[in-house]
Image (cartoon, rainbow, N blue to C red):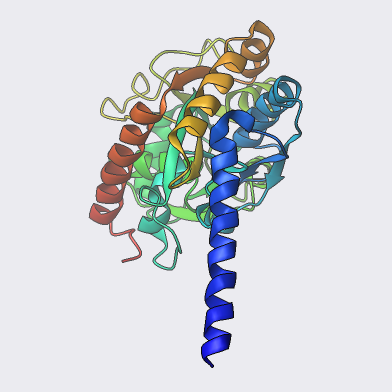
Length: 324
């Protein structure tokens, strides 16, 4: 047994040494020297996915290493990054729906603050409230009034639990003091289809999607979640203008790494992604989709994650929606 224990201890020590050397190599300036994965916990076609693909294409050229997008919808995708080696090769690209993961599901195997290191906020993306084209309302005030008349009868779609689309609708529901039912979808595309069919009565959609569908008379657009009106929907009021003066929600998207990722790797990622965001063609590709570059460094981004987690967990708890 003594020999076995010695061999076992030596093996474990060797593995730990290999892991340390791997991280040390990354710190020494060789990062990245292999494939980098951006795990996106939403389906292809989502805003998060679109941002990731634009950035990944540029980083692949810049680094001369493949940067691939791995769509793993749901909490499993986020959990996989929390458990990944903190060496900069497995990263999470997520929305601020990340901050409510543990609030809405008590079995989540990670902490959105403690188990991640914020690399940077990348962008913000105003959302547009879409409803079925045949609903007998033409403004957000009218929609809220209808929901108040029919408690629990109107549904709202989301791209999944713990996503930005779910959180935005919950803040709307709380501000408007109405009772509406959540219908989670497998992704944004399915949620939008549900609204067009009339299966659900509201969704916070991507601005570009909402603009295209409104032009085709496939949905009505009631308001946008932004500080000011957006170029794609110049005649659509903001939610504040539409009658909810206390509505406040910043729909950010950012890059996160597993906790304990070396600081110099985080700084390199921040520096290089910021360079990508400053490229005119990248800004144009994003803004056409209603996505606006808004880079924040690791320190500021970590502070934003912590603040949003506290705020939204409190909001959901007061609404009786937390899982704990």
